[in-house]
Image 1 (cartoon, rainbow, N blue to C red):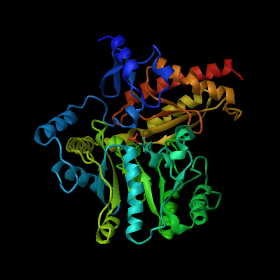
Image 2 (image 1 turned 90 degrees about the vertical axis):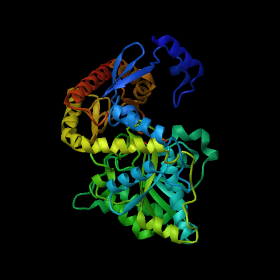
Image 3 (image 1 turned 120 degrees about the vertical axis):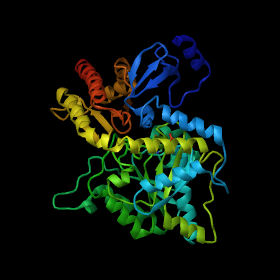
Length: 459
Ligand SMILES: Cc1ncc(COP(=O)(O)O)c(C=O)c1O
C-alpha cells in the first residue's frame, strides 16, 4: 500500500486533533500502518522509534497478540453490557486487579473511556461526596500551573494551558484556581517540605477561597505540562496534610503516571501517599482499547452510599465496557508476569544517564528532568553561560524547526511548548538497553542540529 491514497483520504476527510490545517495538508503527513515492539512503520515502509509510547500509553509496545486475543475472546462471549445496575466478569476482575495494585484503602474503581472523562468523574465524585454530607458549598478545585487535565469543558477549566482554553473561556465554570507547580521549587536550607513555595501556595489558596468552599486539590505526581516535573521529597505528604486539615479531597491525576510509567503501579505509591482518588487511562490497557477511570478510597464510597444521596450520580454507556476491561485484565497480567515494573526500575538509571550524556555533549540543553520512563529535555540558548532562548528563537523552534528535526530523526517524541521549549520523551515500558541507546542517539541528532541552528540564528 503506498502513502498517497491514504494521505489524500486523511487530508480530505479526517479532522485531526490539535493539528494545524497547514501541517495536516503537508506532503510530510505520515500514515502509520503497523507496529511491533517499540517501533512503527508508515505506509511507505519507513520505520520510526515510538519514543512517546503513542501518547504516553502503548506501555507494552505494539503487536501484542495476547491483548488482541483477550479482546477477541471477550467479544465472542459478551460483546457488551453496561455497568448500570449490572455487573459482568471482565469489569469486576479489572476493578479487583486495579484495587489490589492501588495504595492504602483505595478499593473502588469507576470506569469511563478516556482520561478527560476520568478527571470529569473525579470532579463530580468530589462534589457528590461533599453534597451527601451536607457540605453543599464545596465545589471549587485547586490545580497547578501548566497542568493538562483534559479537554471536556469541565476538565478544560482545570487544565492550565492557555492555548487550549482561550477560545472557550465563556463556556467554562468559574470554580478553578491555579497555583504554582513544583518546577524549580526547592526546600530552603534547614527547612522541610512545608516550607516549599508550591506547598504554601496551595494552603494560601484554600484559605483565600474559604476552606468550606473548596472541594478538591488535583495534581499529577510527575507533571507532564512544563516537562516531566518531579516533586521535591515530602511534597505529596504536605498535600495530604493540608487536604486533611481543611476537609478537601486530594486527587492524583495519574492518566500518564499510573501503570508503570514511573516504575510503579501508581505514581502515588512511588511518592508514598494515599490520595482520595486516582484518575487513570492510557496505560491501563497499553492503549489496546480505550479505557479510563477513577479509583476511590473505600470509606468515601461507603459514606456516600450510606447517605441520603445513596449513589454516585454519574455514568456513561460504555464505561466499564467488557472488551476494554478484558484487555485491561490481560494487560495487568502480562505486566505482572513479565516483571515490567522491575524492568523500568532496572533501566531508568541507564535511560537518565544516556539523556544526560546528550545534555553534556551540547550547549543548548538547560536541564534533563524526569524519572522512570518519563523525561523532558529542555532547551536554552547557551547552557554554559545560563542564557535562555530569545523570543524569536523560541517561536521558530516551536513553530516548526524542532518538529522538522524530530521527523528527520524518524522518532516520535514531542517538541513541547508548555511553559518552556522541550522534548517530551516517554517510550514503551518494554524498551530495553538497545532501544534506549537508539532513542538517545536520535535525540542526540535532534539536539545537535538544534545546537547548530542556534549558532546560525543568534537572534
Ligand atoms: C494528566 C492527564 N490527565 C488527563 C488527560 C486527558 O486524557 P484523554 O486525552 O484520554 O482525554 C491527559 C491526556 O494526556 C493527561 O495527561
